[in-house]
Length: 233
Image (cartoon, rainbow, N blue to C red):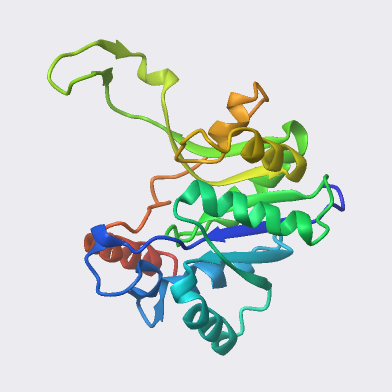
């Protein structure tokens, strides 16, 4: 790969109501450390990542700062106050990078902080693909039949499952491309970043992910993570 900067934006926004904890989900323990530290430590170990920018709720910023300082996560460069939605948080972080002088040809990876099962090889492939086409998204093919319905009661049509993928993160972009996409479609409500680039009719490469790349959403997911982690030893 080229000598461009490789940046990671790690999103830890949200209160995690579905998880049911009395505190934000990033503080849920995954073994000996909270998820915040587990994810950031794994991201920091990836040789393809030069620097990390953490996005969190304003009310959690001091706690996040103190944890990162105590655990000495070396690659973290800033802790950014996020917005009311995931999309807003991504845009705010990108605008922060712009004000900080990030060059247009930097590669920016956006990762969900609640996906702690980091695969360095997937991250490497994501940067390689984004460098070639300007954008990449990690995704996995579905293994079951897929249908569409408008009301949840009647089948509208079946979809060819070989054409359907489940979107994950990380998603990686040429900085200028993803910044422009967020600014251009600021009022469009979407649930991931790559969809904004696709809306600009720009190519988005698919990097094959894994079912192991789980998102911690409910307490049962913690058990799944700990089982996965035990297999890595």
